[in-house]
Length: 347
Image 1 (tube, rainbow, N blue to C red):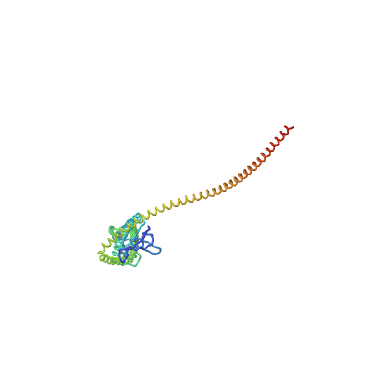
Image 2: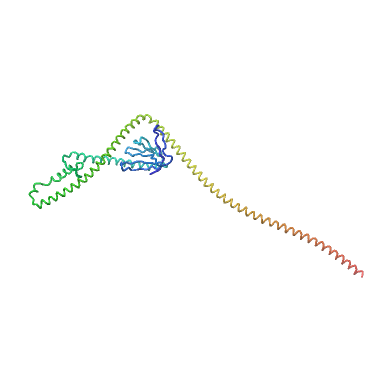
């Protein structure tokens, strides 16, 4: 089981690929036990876009590193699969070879079984003995049982049996009964095998008719291919151009993938830068809040300083006034002293 993009060749031009799926779908191998064949199955929803029976003459061709194709003569088309990698393409091709070999072995085994079952049917049809219609005598099995009894009894001497005593004759009779029981068991097995082969005859006839129709269709297809063989060179050149285009597209896709990886890396770097920017923005906001607090404290300190300076100025003015008053008082005291000194001198 794998996933791939499914394509079919254009039935009109036989050149261009027509996609049958909008996206990659599951492509798987399937064993059809009723027909004893191997198939390649792919479903797009409920629609079967591939139902190809694998035959021994099929070939899966790798046209590029991620694309492969095979021709289905029964469906009268060519299928193409586009894989996501060369590894998936190689794995699908290996499985194709395995199931192709299994289909060949199954076909050979079926042919051998048809030959083996047809041989006893022909022998049973030529018997001359007639017997009642019993489970042992269906499809002429009594005719086959009669020669077995004769063959097994030929090497035994019959003339001496009449001259033997009764007890010895009874032992020989039991021996013959055992031989007859063995022959009956073998005959029953042959009868079952013939019944099974008879039941399969109808199916084989249907398959033979289908094979004949398929052979006629293949013959017509070969005739058509011979008619269009003159266009093989054009198809080959177109195929070469398609391969070159596919390679160019793969190279372009590779470049785009590298560019996408580079852009992803740049996006990751941008995300890291955005995270750093967010972190720095948060820190800046914290610093701004702290700065506002400091500005408030500074403004408070300035107001207190201004108030203190005003108080100091007032204190200086008061002190200056006090000094002036003190100077006046000292001057008055000096005059008073001088006056007292003069009074003392006069007295």
